[in-house]
Image (cartoon, rainbow, N blue to C red; front, side, top):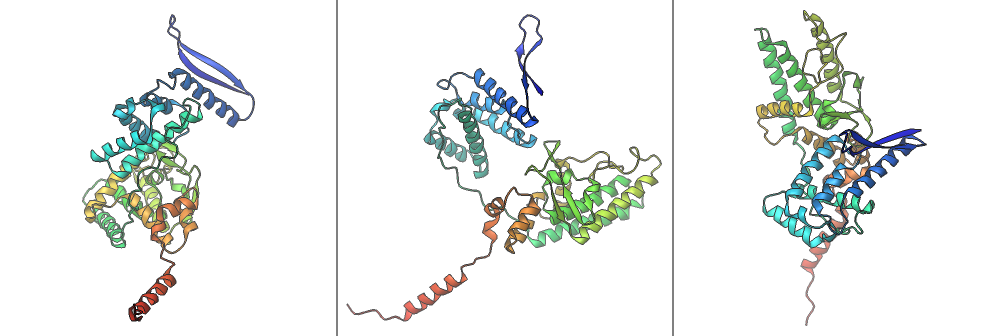
Length: 386
């Protein structure tokens, strides 16, 4: 038996919060489904009739409803809703939207400098909000059903092999430099940061893990050479990976050896400190801000650290996420679609194919040869007399 309490405002006299309580019998999933339905009905009840409902108010109701999003997804949608609310499109009546109205808005956004990716993100949020409103019977119809979105952005670009090599070399040189200066009194934490930076680049290039997954790694996540990715950082919150479930993959021998050697070094170094940080042994986090590894780094900090190595390597266009594309294209080019799906943590192989099919080598060589032979025959064939 589950009890659901929902705030419905404040008592006008006492000023205390007012709640409604519901009792549900069944599983936790039954209770959560009932809660979501009650919240959606409450959001719809606060809205005016569909005839007078403008898009800005509908978008806000969609944002306030329980959607089960990842924290970073909610942050992104909140930013899009803020833009659409201030845009002239937000004042348009939701039920009166037409593909023509939306296409005019997208043309205006593109004229103002918005990229295809940005326009596509706004349209995805708009379509999702309208679908929610239609499913909850807030709108009598889906005004954009069947409307095609903008063209897909250019294929995701992997890092060239030369760039990967330059980044690894820059991280190694940085570590050697810090080691040399450490004997002259440089703080120990700087040495540990340089070691973490090298491991970060090696892991990103080997595993293809997302930045939030790298930031959430714990020291015990590596068993021999098997890496278990069971968590991710989303808008500063620890949650599951993007696909909603964990995955396991095998690291290269050099990457796994580097991980184990550094962990052993960090543990010895922590014990040598006059006042070791944190209780007990080495803390849980692989990438940490302290010698004891008790304070994990945020995903954005990993991005800043990588940017420093990238600048030293002289590769301004490199990002941590492009390592992921390098891993994907290497596997897909070799025809290992399912291996790429498993390593990247895609929900299904269709996602992998949709994003990386462009690197699959052509299988129509025999067709090209047949056309080539036909063209050669055409050159020598005499024209028939008139």
